[in-house]
Length: 302
Image (cartoon, rainbow, N blue to C red; front, side, top):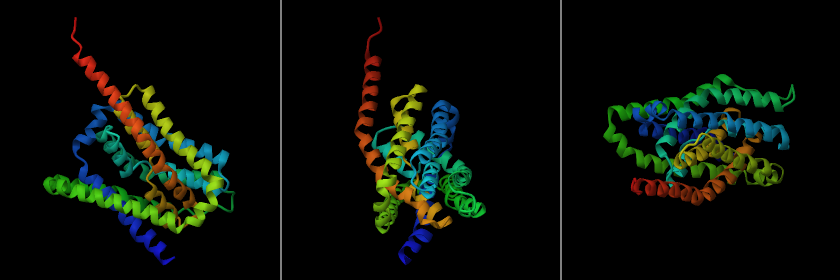
């Protein structure tokens, strides 16, 4: 119990602050200019990421959630859009990392305000009156601002004032972040092994479908918008890979409800498997499109 308290109150917030500070160190004005230069890709990504997963989560929770806590947990997971993990998968897939960074930065700022709203709606929809857990909106906003907006702004200021230092620090911070996230999610899963085992049968289908459908929705929306393959794969990962460390911070540290954290813990088992399974196909799709573009460019005119 003491270890979990230390993990939830110290390690998870520190990991998230480091994630966002690292994101800030990587951001330049060019990243935000993409909103103007590539408005369609950014707009499609934001709509898919901020609206799609919560809608899917509410629908699946209504149909499949065995308890109100699992249902609200699904909504919270869906509300915690992307994060540094999606950047790693996007890079591994050889997709559009620059678009991924831009979307992650924008959603990290926007979700500070959408997460409390979606959490409130989830509690109102799935819990009966008189049984609704307290929602400290003020504390939640302060915590989210502390672990997202302030570190991102701080990282950007450091990059603007000391770009050489930012470049040198970025890679070590990325490595530390990935290690910390693996440690945090693994420790949470191991310490909650019994909870995961007991809920896997009843909530496993909900979690699997939520992950698969969000990724499929990202693919469908990107293809309808006729985005290139690299941007399509980026949006798939941005939509389907959630910020589970943030979801654990909200459920375990802010709301202090282990029951609400169960969905995030189950998602931590399913999400990496689906994301890794997609990598080979994503690389093939991108390589095939790039090869086709090269052939067209090399075909003599006339």
